[in-house]
Length: 106
Image (cartoon, rainbow, N blue to C red; front, side, top):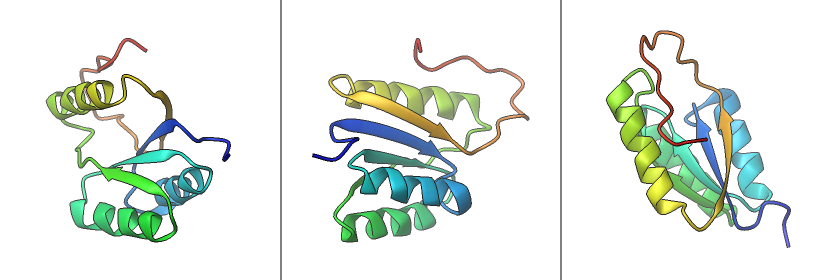
């Protein structure tokens, strides 16, 4: 059994750089990785790489500067992850957001 089996890891900025590397590492540790970034094509490539290595990944494109999109993302993750533990890894900066409200109660 891998250390993150039955865990869901939400990684923002997962399309490249540190976010991509973190996504691969979490997947290799058994987590189901939810890949979040704006670049759908690149997220699909990262997902394909994770699947090819035997991991699990879901692509959820989102612009984290769009408050409504972030709220919708949080609601989708909450609906889909109600029976699993969730680990969050964030690489993306949301410094330009003028309104920030947590999408979930955590």
